[in-house]
Image (cartoon, rainbow, N blue to C red; front, side):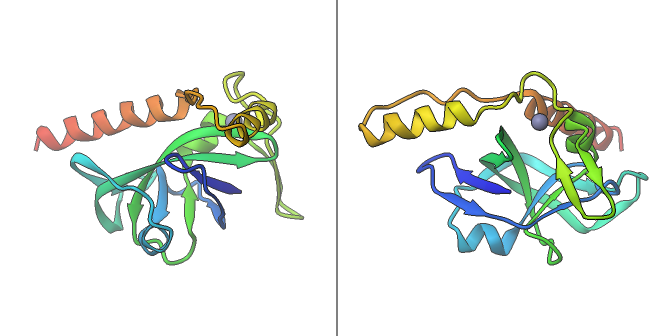
Length: 166
Ligand SMILES: [Zn+2]
């Protein structure tokens, strides 16, 4: 998978772990620092939660980054929570898996994006068009794909409400 910084469109290849035991979408802190991503501070820290409702040893998330993600012609604007992962650079959990429902070949480890919602589309053309414009020195407003981001924000809101009640 390729991540792209939204500020300078610099692409970086990443190792991604699909983890149905995790809830959200995460990026490793050291990886973020190494590639100088722009950090966005969360309004309030969010507790990392596993799908089974247990707490994650990663603790509280205080920052996130926004990236464009490219994989097999699939493109998506994504917000990733920054925490210590260690075992991968990016972890995509249940929210992402449920949203895109990728086709997995458990034997070969191959993942195909064949069942994405219409919003994801095959946006390779759009990327190429933008790169062409960039080469010409034109500016273009990036059209964000909001689905996963919106879902994730809903989830964060719920998470916050849960914290409020305690
Ligand atoms: Zn998709």
